[in-house]
Amino acid sequence: MENLDVIRSRLAHATGTFHYWRAFPENDKFLFTDGVKDMAETCEASWLITAIFSWQIDAKVENEPFQVWTLRFCDKEKGDHALLICEDGNNMELARQEIGYTDFPLPEGIELFLDGGVLMLPSEY
Image 1 (cartoon, rainbow, N blue to C red):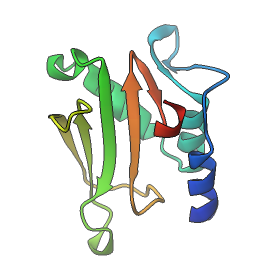
Image 2 (tube, helix red, strand yellow; image 1 turned 60 degrees about the vertical axis):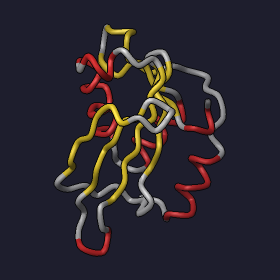
Image 3 (cartoon, helix red, strand yellow; image 1 turned 180 degrees about the vertical axis):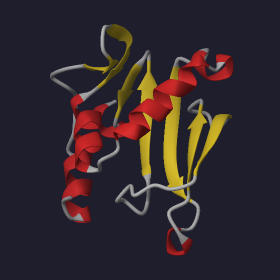
Image 4 (cartoon, rainbow, N blue to C red; image 1 turned 45 degrees about the vertical axis):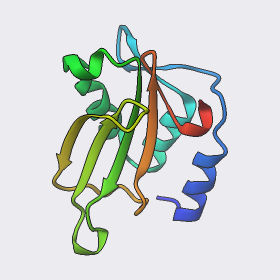
């Protein structure tokens, strides 16, 4: 895995996308951008994409066309316990999932946007 500054720089410089990637084969309902693909590969976090799209069957989440997903550590010094939180873009929480263990490399976690079924980095919005 690359060092943290390299990862942060790569993610911050992701703008737009050349290709939309399918989260699930033969299904165009859930797509993600080049930046999210790079994040998943660089941070070894394909599980994060799956977790976010798995929430799309929850009616409260599914009915919100714009979603802000945040992965944040509860206390990185005490372990690798994290929370995955979905909000509607106006700080209204729609979902929360406890992650008992993650080796996600960025101690500050990450924020992703889901807009119209496309998962992207904030810099790609």
